Image (tube, rainbow, N blue to C red; front, top):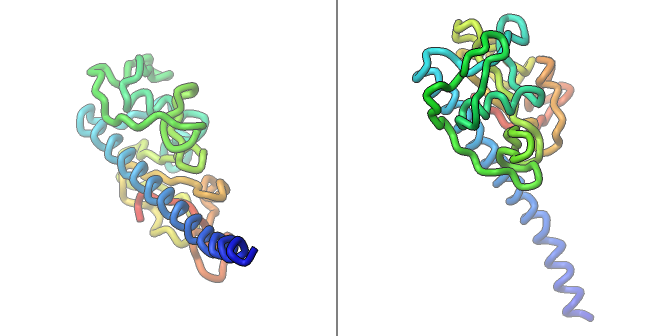
Length: 194
């Protein structure tokens, strides 16, 4: 009984360390995925002279948002998966069929592109969110009100994951990102631009 008790105590002490290492590995994977996504979008821009956006801008001042509703459209274009048509112009957005990225398939809608819906999921099971510079002014609205850099962000594309808690107020541009002493402090989102 004493030996079993000691083993249980040791397991209790090691479990939080193991869980912390797992969480850190997922954050690193999300950061790596975001880097690959941003690189793929920029490679598309280099090849075609425009961003792989469908339809019209979804915010003011003219950023194009990628979220749960249109994630599959973007990643179909970047993976050259079938024909990806712009719903406004009817143009094929990747006529050369160039594969700009080849992410792994998702396992249980976590950590890859789902084979059923074509969306790219982070390690916690949420769709990656992106903002693309619709009006080509090299300025994107920072999705966070504080703690995540200036506004505008001087990139053509940025991305973020809403993290382990799968909650973020960043989509409405009123989230706080690790700002001490303010509401929503300690946000666990993973950002491509930091």
